[in-house]
Image (cartoon, rainbow, N blue to C red):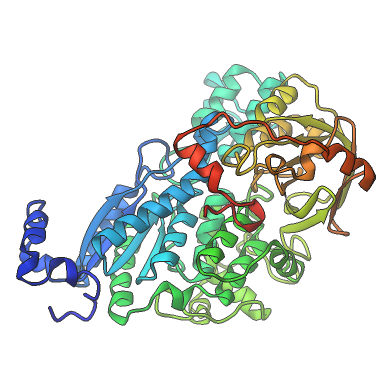
Amino acid sequence: MNDPGKRNSAILTEGPSRAAARSYLRGVGFSKEDLHKPIIGIANTWTEIGPCNFHLRQVAEAVKQGVRDAGGTPMEFNNVTISDGITMRTEGMKASLISREVIADSIELVTRGNSFDGLVCIAGCDKNMPAAIMALARLDIPGMMLYGGSIAPGKLRVGDDGHALTGHVSETTGRLADITILNVFEAIGSHAAGRISDDELEAVEAAACPGPGACGGQFTANTMAMAGEFLGISPMEITGVPAMSPEKASASREAGRMVMELVRKNIKPSHILTRASLENAITAVCASGGSTNAVLHLIAIAHELNIPLSMDDFDTISERTPFICDLSPGGKYVAKDYQDAGGSRVLAERLIERGQLNDVVTVSGKTLRDEAAAAHETPGQPVIRTWDNPLKPTGGLVILKGNLAPEGCVVKVAGHERVLHTGPARVFGSEDLCFKAVEAGEIKPNDVCVIRYEGPRGGPGMREMLAVTAAIKGISELSETVALLTDGRFSGATRGLMAGHVAPEAQEGGPIAFVQEGDRITFDIKARELRVEISDEELAARKQNFKAPESRYKRGVFAKYANTVSSASVGAVTT
């Protein structure tokens, strides 16, 4: 053994005493020469259940070729993954956030068990990206998180009213419009309200997802992919290449070659993932109007690094960071448009101009400033605005506190102009009950839908409620007048709705457990306050003799999670 990158795996493959281990590995195709090279784990979250991760076998093959080209031996292993979009509004959605911990544990377990010298974590959906970064932080061996890439926008022929054209008329009239999965969820709401037909719903459903890749808007997947770039743990520009782009294979091979440089130079995640890089990631999320789930995930990543990070840090950075990326769901464009405009290098260049990024090392071997200096902005691109023309003067999210959220409440303000909302509480003990009320026409303008017992422990698993938000968006008289509140998650897909998730959760006796039907609730963005309009004495009286509902899960992974998970305000990590 003379390769300086073979620091860990020598104990597994070198010397006469390891002949049996080598024999096993030779039995599956590795040569004698392969086993004397640095061994790189390729953690793959491939699945054929949904488009986000469906193409990751091809990505992994390209990464492995890049590793081999650079003198390493790749060994691929698989991980579980859950599709948020497919499981939405079902019991299966509870598995999504839980899967983050299982994936991180799985990557850690396989890597420690096999003494890899380096690691590439290929991820394509909401929870497997933060899980991959959490695992890299724990293991602290040279490695990166590589995003599988976003889906292409769907194409739908629509009429002047924006509704899908169906039948033979759709072949010759109207115009082609770009659509995403969000349009399907909104169409479900419109269909339930009788505003579109079965055929129109079918047309939207059939067109929205034209192939593999993660949801195209600045939802959690693209938000966390961007966060990975600004953390420095994902290669800038390579990360943003869409799933089905002709450039995907070459970009993935380059990632494989890049990890070998990290291994030989022994550049570890602890050299890259720092307080300064976490602040960079938060800044990018705020400037781009990213998902509120970034708060949950970046705090969880900081926890793995033993770096103090709180909700308040997000509010401080958001307040000083103008919102400049016109991305869905609040804006017009999708991830492919962002990449075509110049991508994260252009955004980094903008933020450096304003003095809002720390110059840190990245997995490319370059600093963030070096990456920004390599930016190629497409002339006239409308996606990443300049500082003299922001969408909003401050960032895309805010943190509220008050008697309803003593630990904090995350609200996404990208996509709507309301800074104050007061209305009567409509209280629901689950997402399903609220959704049924929306479908039945029971939600009225100015209502505040309160959905509780959907938190990390109470759900368990903190279901995301895109189905509820999109259904409300499909009803025009509600889309700009209703507010939502939960101890679960609303993520970034609120487009025009004022919505937030609170901590502590109802299951833990948080104040959201004691809201009653008709209570007046106020969101005050400028004052950073969320309150229920009752006295402290009344709230205390309602808390007397509180007893949380008994969990339906007595054993298995849901029960283990519920028994060990922390509050969302500290990342909903398990201990």
